Amino acid sequence: MQGSWATKLVVLFAFRMILHTKLNYRNIALHADNAGTESVACRLRSGQYRYYVWLGFIDIKQAARLAHSKPVKLKVWAYHKCENDSRVELKSDDHVQGCLVDNVVFCVLNEGRLRIV
Image (tube, rainbow, N blue to C red; front, side, top):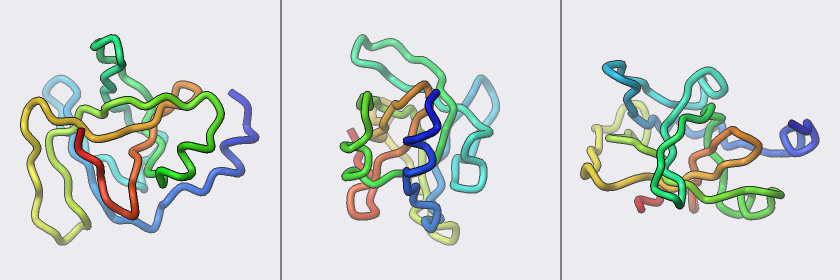
C-alpha cells in the first residue's frame, strides 16, 4: 500500500459516531478510536461479503478524490449518531455506504450523516 494517500487523507475523527457490526457471535462497536484494529463485512457489487480493516469515517468529497476507491456496502446492524444518543437499528437488508481503498474501508459521511443503502 502506498503511504501517500494515507498521509494526505483527512479522516473525520472528530465525529463520535459509532457503528455496530458482528463477527460470528462477537458484537463490535466501530468508532474513530479503534480505526485500524477492527474489521467490517463489506458487500461487493458481486453480492459477496468480504472482511476489510476498518479505518474510520471519511467525507464523501474526500472519498471521491481517492484514486482506485470503490463503493461498498458496510454490513452494520445499528448506529449511534454520537455516544449519548439512542441506538438506531437498521433493517436486515440495509447497509451503510462505504469506500474501499487499498484493502481498507471507510464509512462515507455526507455532511456528517450516514447514507443508508
